[in-house]
Image 1 (cartoon, rainbow, N blue to C red):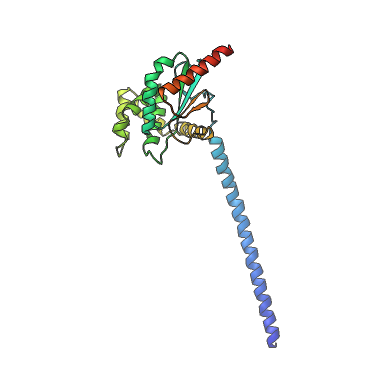
Image 2: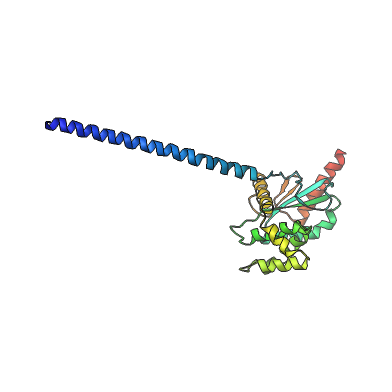
Length: 236
C-alpha cells in the first residue's frame, strides 16, 4: 500500500468515526428530549392547574375577606402587606373612617406581601389566612397591624404570632397545620397574581369600585365613596 492510499484510508476512517459520534450525539439528544419533555410538560401542567382563579378589583371571590355588608354598592379593595408601615397607616386611616362609610361600602382585604423589603410579611399573611379558617381573620389582621412595631424587628416572629393566636382563643395545632397547607399558600399566591394583573406595584394599593386611589387619605377615600354611592343611587 503506497503512502497516498494509506492517507485515504485514514481519512475515511476519521470520517466514519465522526459520523458515528454525530449519530450517537443525536440519539442521546432524542433520548434526553423524550425523557425531559414529559417531565417539563407535567411540571407546567401542575403549575397551571394548581393555581386558582384571580379576581379583578370589581369582583368578589368566594374566599375574599369582607368587612361590612357585601351588598352595599361601593366596594373598597385593598392590597396590603402586614409588615409595610404605610399599610399600617392606611389601616389606621380606614379604622377611623369606617364608621362614616360602613353603610355605603364594604372593605375587601387581599394579600400582597412584598418579601424583598419585608422578610416577615409572608409569615404574617400565613397566620392571618390560617386564622381565617377558624373565623378570626379580621381579629388577627387587626392584631398584626396594631403590633407591627413590635414584631417587625424580631428575628423569629412565630412565637409572637402564636401569642396573638392564643389571645384570640385559636386552636394552635390546627393553625399550624393550616399554615402549612397548600390551600392557604395558594390563596396568598392567587391574591398576589390578581394584584399584579390589576396593576398593583406597591402597598398599600386601594381601589374604590375599581378606581385606584393614588393618595388614600381619609378625605380622598370618603370623597370617592360618596361619588360612587351617589352614582349607584341615581342609577336605581
